[in-house]
Length: 137
Image (cartoon, rainbow, N blue to C red; front, side, top):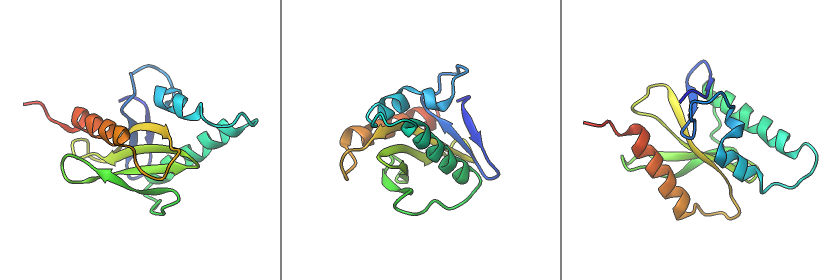
């Protein structure tokens, strides 16, 4: 995971990071999620700036604990929770890593149309968690 947003308290990393010199706003799930936004001039840039600001605040140890911006979304296989960082209808699902200290791992981005977490997104986060957090014996 080479794409990172480093702060004073932790680092935000991205599962989809392929090691290329791309920015996180070029990740496949981000591109798919923003594809659902209206084509108003500047809309995508505005959402990107808001999401980046939230990641930066999170990495600096500031509280985002407000249902409008950040909340517990579902359970991980280890009994802990994963979270949603929210900007409008765009969500970044992620968790605080046990394997990599001081890291918040973003599983993927989605455009969320409804209120409930879809089973497909829950499964995707859990599969990504297993891939990143499971220590091979």
